[in-house]
Length: 232
Image 1 (cartoon, rainbow, N blue to C red):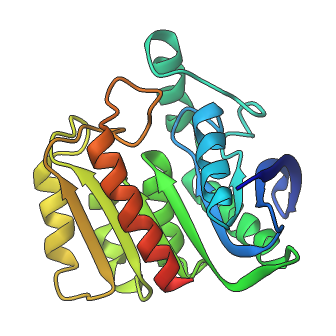
Image 2: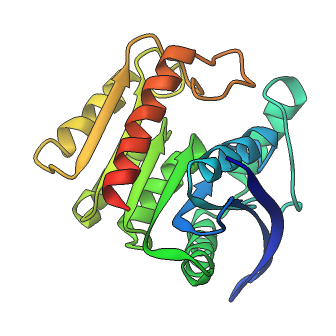
Image 3: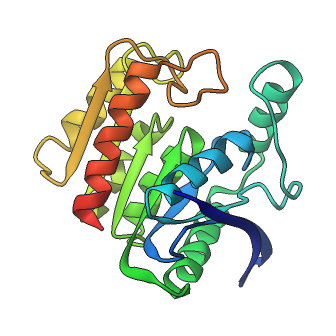
């Protein structure tokens, strides 16, 4: 399916920032707020946006690091990795959550977007997607290897909608014990679904990274598509 993509500006109480919009061929469909890794809205994130747009979703990916530099695009090793970590550490997480809320409002107002929208985040964006769900900004949330979710379990009671989480058992950034603590916390919450992929490292969904693991990525994408179809 063909897609139509472009950058748009989002006006918020905290300033104006860019977001990458990808539309399905028909121009309408359920909405997804796509939340970046620490490497910016780079080619991989844009590819993911286009991929979900090809599946019939209206996808909007905000530039979370805009306060430190507009449209920053980084690779995954060396100096780029170091800069990405610095950008993450330099981000005001409360303001980032406000940016996501502003993005969600714009997405809901776009022509042809249905009444329910979801957030979908990877790495740093996975953590942000979790907090977006806790904030009640979206109707459903997907979190891929969200580092730091285990540190935000005090917000577990605020998760009142459906959430899907993906983790790799071999993740060198998120200990398996952290994943187990998340699973234990949400054990009684039937709306929270957690998948752990035995052979997967951190970043297993990104085919631009050496940690890409195609079988795990394919399984996770299948779970995600089913989840979004059911919830949106």
